[in-house]
Length: 284
Image (cartoon, rainbow, N blue to C red; front, side):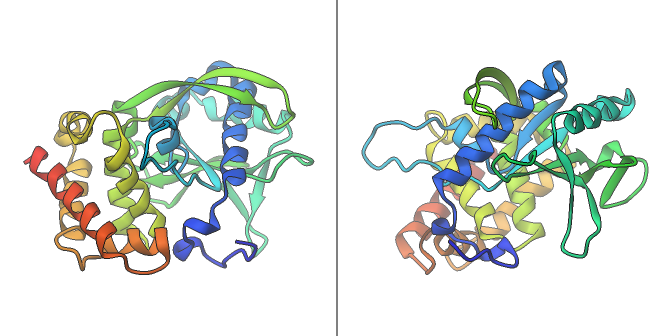
């Protein structure tokens, strides 16, 4: 969409472009080259994950993931414990990244933007709420580096996968780097929590997409979720998932069709409902 919506909660499928997605992939690869070994202290969460967990495949009925417009990176607890955030911030600055400023002109310590003269992408840093001693939405670690406190993010550290990115950096240099991404179990838990916490149609689509295409079927996702269910944030996510997909009129299925088509689509809603309920049965 040419028109940038004031808020992205009701952006739909057509507002996302493969070009946007490619820029986010490039930014991710670029960051891996900038941060070197410190990239191990980051786990990719958010909208880039589905396309990395579900590689494109040539089969009838397969639809590539619609992608994302921004990069979400979870920080490890070690980043706090060992003051690694100062090194990360210094390396980001040295590479030309800068802390972003919101519409009111205030610094957003958890959001950085790509260097001048490169494609414009924002990078959000997140940290598990349980890693923090104080209850604040944005945890500020030093003068210009912070992270968004996120409930349940610790799950991404228990279920994460290493993938190889092979492509071009923001400066057009080919690079091959390994990065950690959130695994399918933690991803479904985090998306369920996001659906509960905000009205952004894409959260529901991302969740459905993974259920539809990941691995050899829902059992693969259930196997990744089950070890996480000792965590109350994961159990709460399951409870919310059940409520948001209790029947076809619920906001879960409805938001998926609104994202995908811009209107209600009974077949898609029924498919999504059936998949979530089948997953819940595997977890019961």
